[in-house]
Image 1 (cartoon, helix red, strand yellow):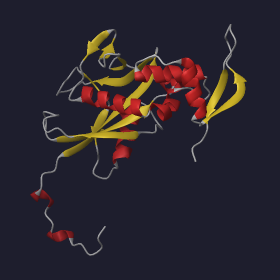
Image 2 (cartoon, one colour):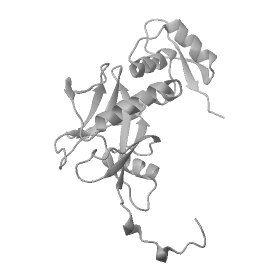
Image 3 (cartoon, rainbow, N blue to C red):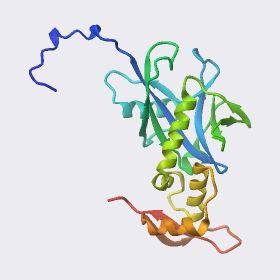
Image 4 (cartoon, one colour):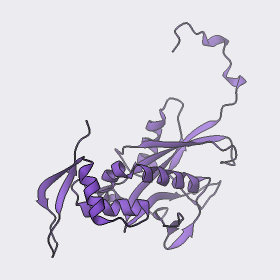
Length: 229
């Protein structure tokens, strides 16, 4: 901050002041498909429609802190790492007023996904291979431009899946589980030998010497992600 700036001569009312919000895209893998956490709106606009958990940014709050707060208060997901995805600022994206939304991505591990206690007004909507969202087997449209936000977030996730996939598997995982996450996000099958070779050659993995249990056939080795430098 400039030390000699005198705010007494500055009129903030001389400029438009759009509101800023955060919308949180919490994604997990459910039955081999990516799924996103939605909340049904109970007030206009778009009352009764499904929407991403979102909220306005307080004047003394950072964007990331707002996203963490929204996930904690509205989605009951605490202590969740978030990553900024994109800014959505279409003039007519919200019928109430000019609102600029910053999208944040949160990746739900299998443990976090299973721990969700969804109420009647919450759901994990599947993202189908056609890119549409489904709840109880039926396609749904989201409030505001949240369909666009989900699509953009999924596209960014696909671009970074080799690194992001580790947040979507258990902390100890098999290469089969890692491949299944890749296939779910990418929406296509992958060649097993080629995938295993690529994952092992790129580094970042360490075999634990332990093997999965409860398998009638030869159990697979469990791996962990190595910490980044």
